[in-house]
Length: 317
Image (cartoon, rainbow, N blue to C red):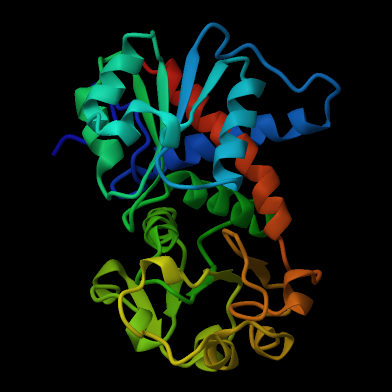
């Protein structure tokens, strides 16, 4: 079956999801990102790889961290960057998504970075753009967030070096998390020893076992002996009905405290895709502690997004 993200040469031409991406493609992105990390320490933080290219950031859903890091990444690649104000655009006046894309393509767009509340929107766009135009998914509904997963993989590789012996726990609102889905696909493709999902039954989707994930509803059991802990935000805006008794009760059972962290390996790292709800899913003592690598994730995210954009824009039709 053809992968819509790859061209006939097997090169990455769009990044829509980590699902189905070959291991060598994921590794190529991580290796390329590694070459960009030192750029942050230079006086001139630019390379000319996307000079003359036009990158359009289309965020139909609010974001600060992701949009900003994509913008910084594109500018460091010397691209011309355009941030579309969706609330003031024709899309807010009823123009269809594909009409918006067609009009921007007529303005010589080379790459679209798309965040959309509807699952599948970036895939739809990728099917309708010209062969020389590329699409990067910056998060679609509850479906996927591939660049977040890739920066998570980069962070894990940076601190743990090798995936093969690791046990990784993903904790919290997995039901509504596109990050969790993308992380699970990437982790299993990269060959981690074990992926665990920890959360209340109401926030655990079906089918996790079929994805090769061990499921725990007891946090103490789930954290025992893990190497990496990825905490997730409670996505109240996506919840329908009362899935939890209260945030206080949630923190009591599933919030990461120093006591619960002590159940993991002594050198375990703590990650979070952000934004964090302190006192809900993570205690400040842990978030600001020496095992947390959350700010490193943000820093590495720029290099990873530079890698993705440089790779897809360099792919031929």
